[in-house]
Length: 104
Image (cartoon, rainbow, N blue to C red; front, side):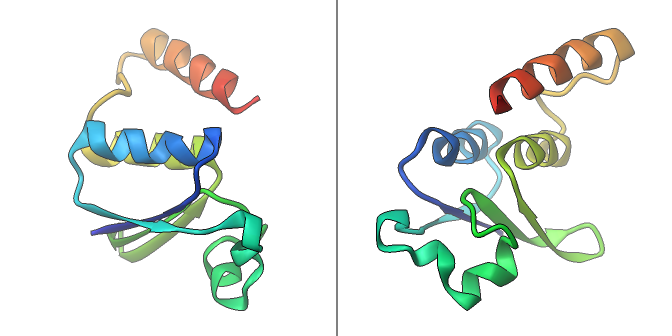
């Protein structure tokens, strides 16, 4: 099960969409950034930069995996699901290009 900490922002929607597309089991946990919920000590343990989105994968490699930053999350979810990220070097580089583009 993956806990997805997010809010209704452009970056916040990215992992939500990816989780739906991959079909990985997940739970959406709203973090109201207007009320500064991202600044709590509990959320700091999940996202050291106090930013959404962030995920906690309770079935990650070697145990629980915590990630923040939308690009890192999208890459992780694609690899975990075995979808959306090619293995052929040229196609992989092209996909990485667009992943980096979405982050800027």
